Amino acid sequence: MTVDGRTLHFTDTGGGATHPPIVLVHGFPFHSGVWDAAVTALKTDYRVIAPDLRGFGKSELGPADVSLMSDFADDIHALLDGLKVPKVTLFGHSMGGYVVLDFVKRYANRVAGLGLVSTRPGPDSAEAAEKRLATAKKVRAEGAEFLIADMSAKVLSPAHRKDAEMVRAAAGFMTPAQPAGIAAALAGMAKRADMTSVLSTYKGPALVVTGDADELIPAKESEAMSEKLNAPVVVLHGAGHLASLEKTVEFDSALRGWLPKVK
Ligand code: MLT
Image (cartoon, rainbow, N blue to C red; front, side, top):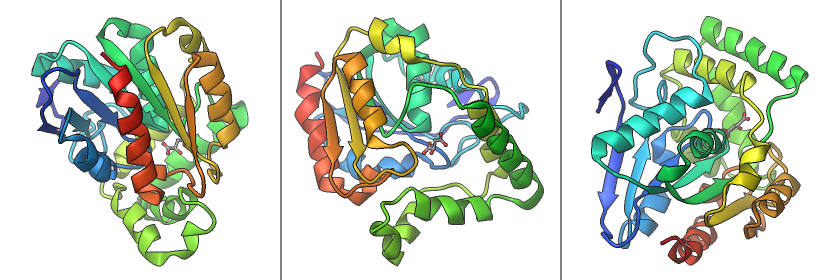
């Protein structure tokens, strides 16, 4: 689809006319392929849409050098309008969760269900934001390979980091070919707003999923988020930040077990 003159790539599979379609929003620095196993597990019963956020995968960044979470959310909104889909269940992984919370805040009437995976509602500390901007500068100067080498290990649990095949699989879901997109998302994350209030204003069905070995966003933050949302939390034992890859079967069954609550 073309949105504001930019190509926005997405996959759209499966069926399930009686249920709102599911939109899976990837994290940083991934592309929509990170959801491949989940798409396979869900598409027999549900329509599943997985976009590449601007500047990731096959989606173009466009002229801006900052991708705000609201920009990503607006692209999803435009995608739903383009597909003539009135309401969806949104899942967001990590940065995808930041995007989804921004979407819920501004487009609540389009949200039938909310899934937050290994994410947090709060903004960066001043120190974290500064570090991100320094990384963005380095990515613009040197390319994204160093970041992908670092992230493809960090997103896994300490045990899974020793599994070369799993590290390779995680790296394969990332987008080294778009350093400008990566730098723009880093700058956007550094500027993101506090979305904690959305957790108490959102009244629909929600699910929180995390891994107990997540070193990027500790599981206790997900537990706190689930309390504020008044929603169940599934803590996957032995999973790091990328539970959908590290504990595929348990991850997919958590989603499938909860989805019937969304009408
Ligand atoms: C992600 O997986 O999307 C990132 O770890 C999020 C972040 O850097 O805050």
